[in-house]
Image (cartoon, rainbow, N blue to C red):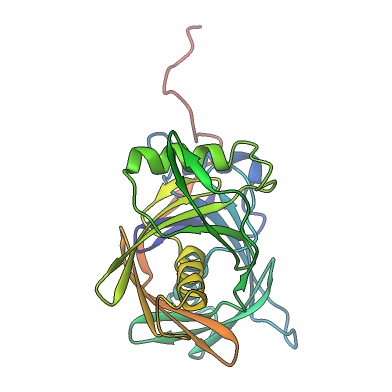
Length: 271
């Protein structure tokens, strides 16, 4: 039995539990939206020892049980939870992730995260679907992204994203695929997220879109750049070589989770 808190960042939702609360083997069952808590992923957290170079540690698992390097919406949710629960005092929280220690700051808009440096790579062969082809911009935000400045139907996005994460040699570790179209001074984005599928929001994906737009002259270099995802907008900017992401995070509910019951069909065995 363990206390689990559910938070979401623009509809990208997570079950948050202390490290060791339950085995990663049951992440799929916990994330199941009909027989479990229902989430895009599970975040295990712990508080650092005094004198450490960080205040808390985040380990995240995707809905399919895979472990990504980083999650922008997830780290905002964790930061808000740590503040809500009074586990860490102060307006700034240093969170250790698989890509290093990231500084998170509580602001009126929610949480601002220093996401590190976005690195633009050299593109491979275009992404194709039937007779359609799109060039893409690879962006490394600690996890891999392929940014496409086009907006096909969601059915095509799902098919392209599934193939890109189904053994495509260009993306040996899988990839988050962002489809983008300009919307005035902002960019509207739909993301197929590695290990999850098409999501309401992707924080690292929004950062990757802004970095690609800056690099290609589609937006003012360094922003601020507004990225509008299905779940809502994020503001992305660059300061001193670091990409900053600002957006909300909200508490949904808390529950006492009995992992022995998760995923059960409710049928009783005959004696």
